[in-house]
Image 1 (cartoon, each protein chain N blue to C red):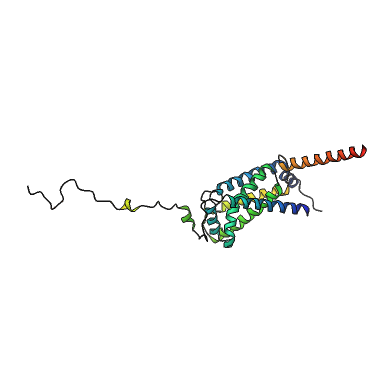
Image 2: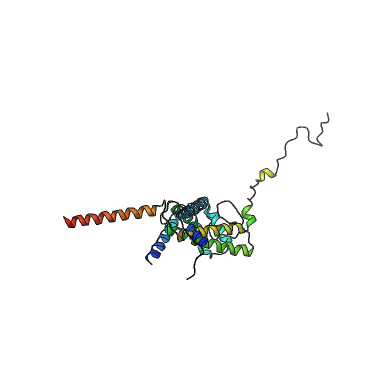
Length: 74
Length: 177
């Protein structure tokens, strides 16, 4: 009986120390609020890097020559 | 009274011998230190993984996900050095049983969630289930034969015994004097 109590006390001590460490050294990625269920493929596949608008829309470059319809009459 | 077959008696005595206990302590302790260490910086991911298992009530998901890496790390380290061996192996037996129940339910359900075992993404499989049965058997072996070879538990009890004997010797000397 005494041995069982000592074992249980040891287990409780380990859990309490672990909780103390866990709340002292929290990582930065802990979600705020209720975590949502994510299926396996979403977990495994990394999300693609965000593409900025600047990469998609190309700014029209000024043509080196004269613009069509603006032909030099000379 | 039934007689045990000789080979069974040999197997039993071998299974509870100190080398097997030492190997189980080091392998189980090393595995759980590695598992705990790989999760410590990623508690958020672990909380999501625990949520994805859909076993625990939501109010328990966060404390379990936060404490689990440290429980694994501390228990594994205690097993390696042989301090609080019985408590640490009992706790790991409980943790492994919980893992087995959660894994079994999700494998039967057909859910392919992340295992969250050793940090890297790894889908659930029967192989992980068998590996956890191995870990559970190791923790039960340590509980069945908590030999203190190369352990702090044995060193501390020897120290305490020596101190008690010295104290008893002093009392005897005093009573004589």
